[in-house]
Image (cartoon, rainbow, N blue to C red; front, side):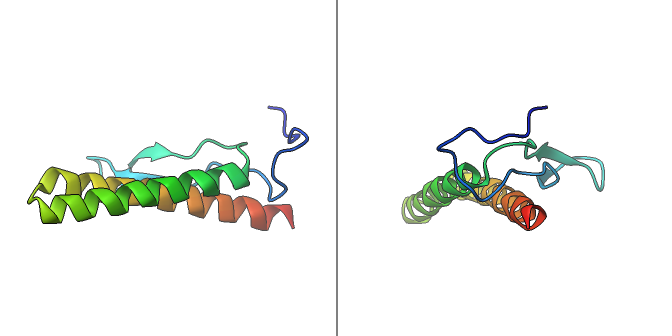
Length: 95
């Protein structure tokens, strides 16, 4: 895998691919994992977008009594956390 970051891409480093989210049916197994080698700047931007969507879904879900939107908010938060955790590991690795 090419580990060079294209010019113009953020300088924070690359994701390491070890953060995961959403519990699987088997104890200790996770359904999703962040892919290694992505720009940490982009991962953080995407996490911010996921958190904004989560905030909106949570608000609408509570106000309109739509539990499915509250669950969607929960899963979006898990994805955002995995992105942030993995980006943080990538930034620490770059030091």
